[in-house]
Image 1 (cartoon, rainbow, N blue to C red):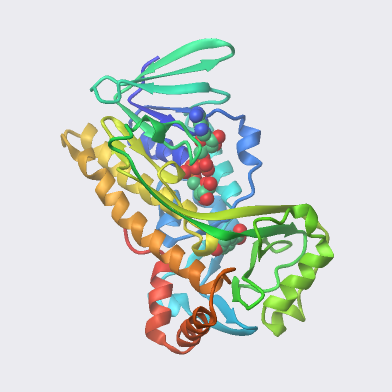
Image 2 (spheres, rainbow, N blue to C red):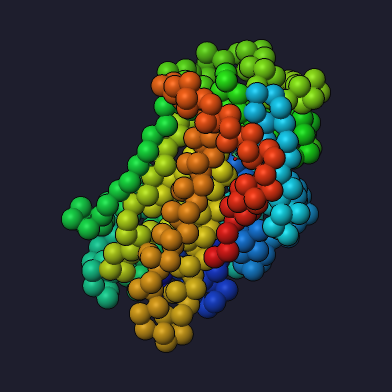
Length: 388
Ligand code: APR
Ligand code: PHB
């Protein structure tokens, strides 16, 4: 088989890249190691920056998002149960779209099907070859047979545990990482959201977040030690802890119910440089991971897709070398989101080893944020997404 761009990974970044390439007349094949059902079973955050929502519309995949998504013009923060609202729309003129990543991925799969896109599931042992030549190819196993795809370029959209990043020689690849000493215990409950906007709560007992998926499906998180397990948190214990950490007006109106999903996720910041090597380009989680505090994971993946799709289209339109700037352009925006996510995580969470001085600094940071328009503007412009 031959294609122009071979995309490894059928998650949101691989699918969006494939969709944008197809609409530009560029042929792609997506190789996904899991079944579609497995990919669509993943529960993940969905706060879309304005730029991400615009990219989905540009790709012809925005209709259900615009019908069923929630446009949020603000977000609540609280410290020690004292809440305040950040008027994102008023401060930036932009909004965020709350629309689950699972729905985004489902919409992208449907769009690929509608356009007759090629997504090969259960593609095993995917392996890129000759990336440092102008004739790379990718091998994989399907139904027990060895297959080969010859291509011009390979997009590594295969997530943090994928194969693509390992193809960059150790002498070239540099990795940066910070692992946080706590996790997020998250639940889904078929209950109405406690607030029409998200609540990020800092508290001496630990961080908490109130989010939602739709008018009767809520998503809540509490910071928990990494030594905990979901089994150690009964629903009763979870609801009680959440109420202690959020503002009283929310705690008093919180509708609780049985959890239909419960999981403990670790938090890390991670960046791999460069995001390109020869004819290979890393995209999304394959190149970087952010703690979910700033809701940047999906948005950074789409940011990479924006830069790479523009570069590849330019190459095929005759602008030789247009892809040479991809890594630097993508990384410049990645690091800004990495920094924001690190700052927001460090400000809102309690660290096991933090001193009383650290605690005072955290409280002062949130106190300043609660009263300063300049400070709120800084948070708002990064939360809604800095321009590409
Ligand atoms: N071969 C083929 N497919 C692979 C391989 C491989 N060796 N390794 C991983 N994959 C597939 C995974 O099964 C997954 O479906 O690549 C896909 C990668 O998707 P994501 O992990 O969702 O990464 P990305 O598309 O970059 O989206 C980033 O997903 O993890 C969240 O928080 C993250 O919201 C962000 C978004
Ligand atoms: C979620 O809805 O799961 C969510 C929302 C915002 C975040 C993280 C997770 O910052």
